Image (cartoon, rainbow, N blue to C red; front, side):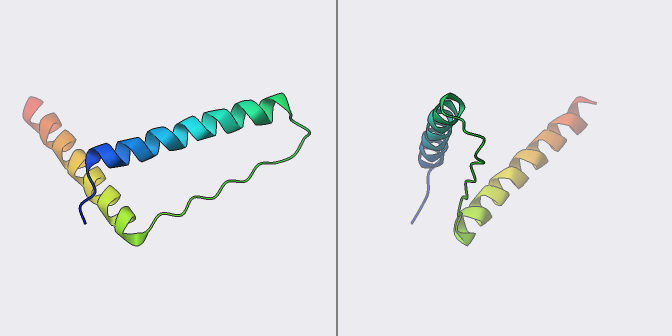
Length: 68
């Protein structure tokens, strides 16, 4: 199964929207309680994200070296 950039972006947008909504709700009804969120990312998902981050870091380093 292939995970596209669009799918990853959609998941991140949805997560951030939900976090914003949670933050608004917590701020408006704050009773001094701590809110603890946990996120579970599969090993395959971690591998894909680390590969993409590595590629971006390598591309940025290449661009920095070639522009210097």
